[in-house]
Image 1 (cartoon, rainbow, N blue to C red):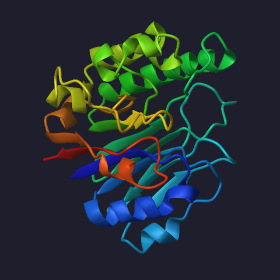
Image 2 (cartoon, helix red, strand yellow):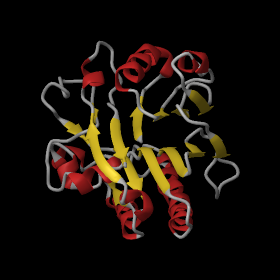
Image 3 (cartoon, rainbow, N blue to C red):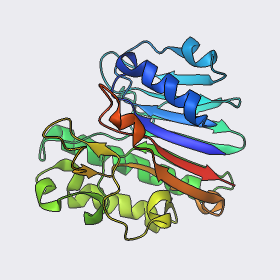
Image 4 (cartoon, rainbow, N blue to C red):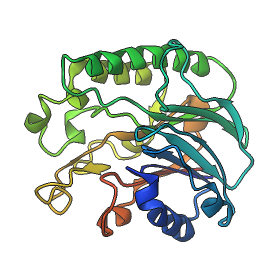
Length: 254
C-alpha cells in the first residue's frame, strides 16, 4: 500500500498539481494539509477513482484524505479542547489501518499565544497517540507536524534557532512520541542522511540551493512499522510553476 502526505498550501490554487500527481504516482491514499478554504473539489478526485473526506474552514488550515479504498471517518477533531474549531485533524479507517492526518500548529512567534497553542495541541495529541499505541488497531499518523526533529533535519540549524519549529519544547514532545514506540518512517530508513527536506521557503532560491527543513512526517506504530518497505520524498512537485512550499512524502507498506 502506497500512502502519501502533502501540505498543498491552498487546494484551490493547486488542485491541478494534485490531480497530475495522483495520475502520475497513483497512491492508494493521499493525506492533504493546509487546504485554506471551505470548499473541497471532491468531484475532481472522484473522477480519478478517489473517495475523499475533508475537514475545512474559511481561509485557513484544512485537512483531507483521498483514497482508492473505502474510507470510514472516525473523528474530525482532536480530543481535549471542545472550543478548538481549527480544521487540523482527521482520523479515518482504511483497509484495516487507522490513518490520522494532522496539521500541527506552526506556533510562531515564540512566546505568543500561538506558541502556547502549539504546545497545548501537542499535549492533547500525546495521550491520544499513547492510547492508540496500546490498542491492537494498526496506526499510522502522517502530515505536517511543523517540528524539525533534529539538527540534521534542517539546512542550517543556526538559522532556525528563533523559530517555533526548532524550539526544545515541541522537539521534546516529538521525541516523546518516538519513545512511546512510534517509528519516524523516513529517518528509520535514512539514518544520518543529511539534506533531505520536505519544505523550502519561497524566498532567496531556497529550493534551488536545498536550504530546507524536514517537517512532514509519518509516525508508525510497531504493527505498521514491521510492514514498512520504503519512505521517500518526491521533489518533482516542488519544481513546478507556482508550487506549494512543501512537497509530498511517501511511505510504501508491504
